Image (cartoon, rainbow, N blue to C red):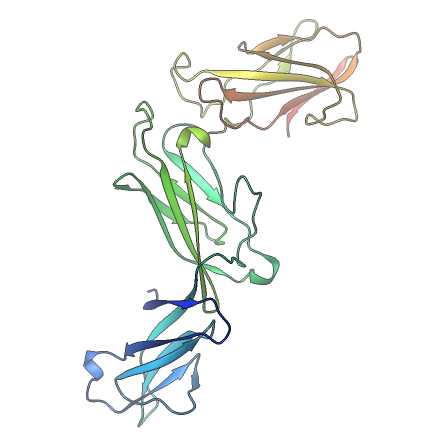
Length: 296
């Protein structure tokens, strides 16, 4: 069971402090109790069922109350501090100015999507306190990954319904007694990335063929993909700007008309209507009569 949590907004200024009232609980109203912070007795000592503590800047923590006669634990409250204004973040790494701190992706429009983040080197111990996700007035169910590096969410909206409202995601991370809130807003259509194209192979001559991903929506006439093909020299990667050939097609095959018998063939997919993220490349390494097709 998660500890009772109290979030205190403290002005971001040197020496700032906030008075925080807390109670051990109604069952202990007439008990002789004393308090600890992070399992250490406070100096000067704090006694009584109801107390007020001064929280200075980031010095909050876990306050627990105990029977004075025996030291028996009774109750506790985890006090977290959120700087006000909340414009400094140290727990998560910013992926890019455009993407922010959280990356979200989905493989189709069925409503399941995942979001991930990276903790900074000195906050690797940080944990997820709470995740909230919603679209308009509807809550979206999310489950935190076992290692705390992301969430998996399920939006029940029909994939055929026009998206009129954004999905809003807020992740609350805490490190020691510091609390930070990270937010991201997006349409599902903006994060749908098709999976890599399966069954990539070469047939007669230099004609390459592939299939739609099994996870992609049907009917294909409604959820269409288009494809980017690229030919680069051996030794280059599919992301290279130094290419022999680059083109787009809506067919699931492409005839490579180049003189060289040694090259790397690359293909990836994108929703041709929403124009969201491209899939990862699939590739075939051609070395004369030897062809090795694989996904990256």
